[in-house]
Structure formats: structure tokens, C-alpha cells
Image (cartoon, one colour):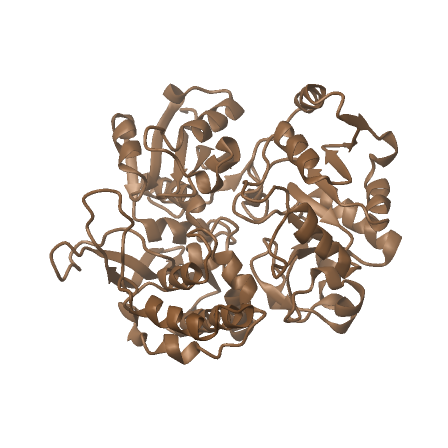
Length: 556
């Protein structure tokens, strides 16, 4: 019997480049390019191959060479440079939205029947849907049915894009993702900073929703569910006028953000109503807009008790994982059951990075000598929990790194949630973030309903918000946003053992079964990946300690 073949899956489009490696149908390792190049979203200069470092990382982790890889798969929206470089290695391409959908399905129980909505800025060019020359149709909303019998597209709404002859940004109509980007731009944030708009929305009221709604038409056909001229300037001009009338005040910006958020939630509910919810076991959401945790929670609450699943890699970094699933299905002629290191993909695949050895960690510490010292008294979960309960803010480097933008306990900054001043210290002094942005709780799943409403909003990957109970408002104010919600990560018995032990120890010390959790990075940088990255960020941020895979280090 032939040995299982190696397959590389490439994720990303013009951003969020990533690579995953699979042997047979077992996923072994995956990494985002940004974690290695230290450039946010993996953005690359024109002369560099945007997957190079991530490919080397995965191959090194498995101890193989590129020539050992039998297949390379990706979405058809990867850069032309990469398609050309890998063409002679049997590169197989799949549509962008289909990859997103498959990346969600592989995180669900085997054999489940799921309806999956994919929505984002835009995806692949759709042949046969072009109306005007130089305006190719691109995916903006896609509706799929996945089951043991196969995969069926229930419909696709497309937008008219511009066929640019160079790399000028693509303009496209009928895209809720691009509508949110327009709002984000008008508010003064960058093209990859829509999360700031979502955080700001909680401080405002949707008083301008109708001003935005006038540009939108909703249809009851999956092939025509959303129309909006997001390729033109009218919406931006309208919002700029509102901002000017409000003299650019924080309140006006917050109301514009809240209005955009309200529209996104309306559109998501409308699209979900077009899915066959009566005949499926689960609803999946994927694509870049799936990172909108507020909209996800509103949908999950509406659909309950129907489960709503959003994968941690629902953005473009997860496209390579979806391509691997599609490739396995294409080769075997059946629905594959991919595993992650021999186990179910959920929840382990949320942290698919390689682990670093004791020697690698020790070498990194030596490289920073004499700026660090080892505190042997703080090496156990119980000792670390006590340290945090006394006000310390700790950088956590534990096991493999995360896939996706949320820190899930592999590369996190942890603190005591019991005082709102902790949030202010982290946002204003340590991470230099806008003070309106929330910080999240990580909680023992068994305690979730004692602290938050809505079990349907309990989420392993921090992709839904939940409304805080009075006890949480009173005893853990640092993790509650201004609107009374929190973006919760719940950790069950199958979660990371160290994180479970730490949460349990903190509960034993304080009576609170949760910690404040935010990403381990400095402003403008990706989440740390290597021990050296962690030490550098720890020293630069001025944290109180660094827990480096079993050892607590202090700054000298």
C-alpha cells in the first residue's frame, strides 16, 4: 500500500497569506505568513513570493522537502506570481467562496448536513454572469449545502467588479464587506481595520441606518440577495456629509459605526432566512465578514437551538484549509473526514502552529541575556494564577500558535478581569490601543451560564459576543464592553490542558473562572510566533512577566 501523499494548501488572496500541510487526510501544521515576516496581514512587496516563509515553516516542521510534496492546492484568487511559480508543481485551484465554505465544514462533526453562507468583500470571478465589458462578475454572497451526499451551491449573488490592468484595488458592487470597508475608511481607519469599526459601534446608536439603507435593495433569491453600489462614491459622500455635519465628533463617528453594524446584522439575518434551515443540522458562516462577532451572536440567538458554527480561520487565511478538503474530496470521490494530528479538527485546528522545543526556548532566552531572569516560584498554573490575581499582566507563550486573528491561549496576554482599571492599563499604556476597543474573557465552559446569557453564544473561537449577567458586570468589569457584552472564548474539557489548568487555578484563588485575554502583540504588529518574538514583545510592552512554555521570566 502506497504511503499517504503530502499536500500543501495555500490560503490568502491579496492578504492573509497562509500555508497548511496535510499527509493523506491528516492535517499536521499550518501558519500565517504574517507571523513569520512580522508584517500585518502578510502583505508583501512586489518582488517577494508571499508564501515562501510559510511553506518553509511547514516543510521544516514535518522534516520534508518541497520535492516530497505531491500536490499544491489553493483558491483561484492567490496572486498571479504564485500561480506562475507553482504551475509546474501541479497546482490545483478552487473557487474562493467554495474554499471558504469547505473550511467551515471541516470543523463540523463528520457526516453532518450543513447550510453554509459565505460573505465577504469579494471572491472569484464567476463565468457566465458578466453583464458589461470590463466588469466581470465576482462572488459576494454564496449559499451552499454540504451533506454526506455531496456539495451543492444553492445560489450566488455577484457584484460587478472592474477588470484592472494593473494592481489598482478592485472596485465591486453588491458587497456588504466592501460597504463596511467604506464606512471604516470614512471613519479614518485603514483597509484592514474594520474591527475598530465594530468596537466603536457599541458606543453609538444606529441613527444613520436609514441614510445607508437607501442605497441597499434586498432580494429573496440567493442569486440576487443584496444590491448596493459599493463600487461608486455616493455612499462615502453621504457619510462624509454626516461626519462633517457632526463636526467629526466621537459621538457622530460612533453613530455611523453603529448604523453600519445594524445594517450588517439586518443583511445577515436576511441571507440566513434564504438557507434551508428546516432540513439541516447546522448553519455555518464563513468569509471575512464572519469575523463580525456581534452579527454572529445576533444570528446565533435568532436561530437557536440550531447550532451556528464559524471557524476560527473564516477569513482568507483559512482558504488553504478549505482547498485541502476539496482536494481530498476530488481525489477520493467521497466526503473526506480530515483530522488534525490524528484527532477531530475541532477545536485543535484553531492552534495549528508548530511547538517549540525546550532548547529553542532556552536559546532565545540566552540571546536576550541579561535582560531576563527566571522566576522559579511562578512556574505552575497555581503560582501563575496567584500572580495574575495580584495584578500582574502576563504574556503567555504556550504550545502551537493560533490560525486566525483571535488569540486563543497559545499567544495571549492574560490579566485579572476583576478591575476596569486593568482594561485601561492594557489599552492605553501597554498596547497603545484606542480606549473604545474591548478586551475579551476566556472562561471555563462549565461556568459560562453563570456569567453570561445565551448558551448559543458560547464559542470556542471568540467569534460571538454574549450578554453579561449582573454578576459578570459586577465582578469582571474589565472584560465587559460598554454595551454590556463580551466576546467570549469558552474552554471545554477538550480544550488546551494548560489553559484549563490555569483557569481552574484562578477560579480557586479568586472565585472567578475567567481571565482577561488579548492578543500577544504590540500595536501594528502580528501576534507573536517564535520564542524570540515573544521575548521581544514582552520587553517592548513592559509586561509583568512572560510565561514561556513552562518557565516564568521577568525583565531585569
